[in-house]
Image (cartoon, rainbow, N blue to C red; front, side, top):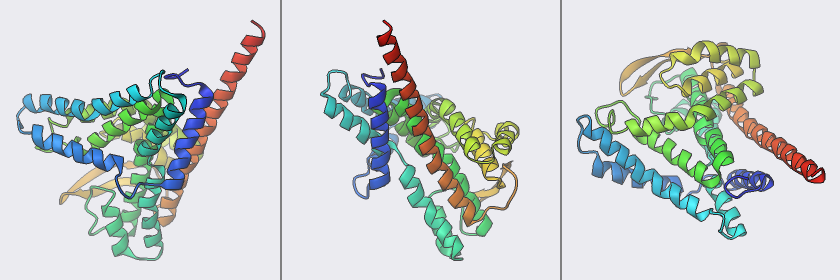
Length: 324
């Protein structure tokens, strides 16, 4: 049992959330994460007024708690054991749909592959600028493809597998907690004068919540691609990245695709030399498609694993009852 859910209920709700995401995609109006982002921005503008350490770190921790804990606690209360069963099912499924970003990932990145395939570089640059923080004005085809593949691999963990992991573990409260914490890291987790102390709590909680999902994501990529090469790149390249979670995910993903990622990128006008990821071909539009397909297949793999565990659990329970 998990927060009052039978294993078969969990499997059905997992399927429901994934199907809703596939059918409905990203909400065009009243997106929950957009609303949360607006709330987080308001909290940050109100509290981030003490740039010196340690006051900024304290206000950053308070801001994180004010943004994340009330909504996560509300999710726990709404899915409590005494909640009417159909209502509880609906809350779990809708929460997973709201938190899951599998279809959104494809909606934002697949058009880049199409633009590159048709040699529409200006369109591809504009589309890429919407999903990455690096400067895209002067990127060539390989640079655009590299940015898109890296975004697909990293956000495959942040928007998809991390959400699935915490939903499987803790249901709707887990998915909401993870997605809100991950959103705050994306908004506040920068090492610039404004956020270097204020965003510390957001960055640390995101690192903590991603420790297990990131490594399961890396393993998923390895299973679905060139396994030996993915594991080799994970083992030899991940430690060079500053992020303890992005390193394994992106190194394994690049190795699974047999593509060379990483390298120099321009951020706010300054060139940043990043460690290499993967090995093999220079990326093009085909690798973007392959990366998105690997994420899609990974979702099916995770559902299959949960189904197998559910079947085994129920079989053991039936056997125990029969031999009691």
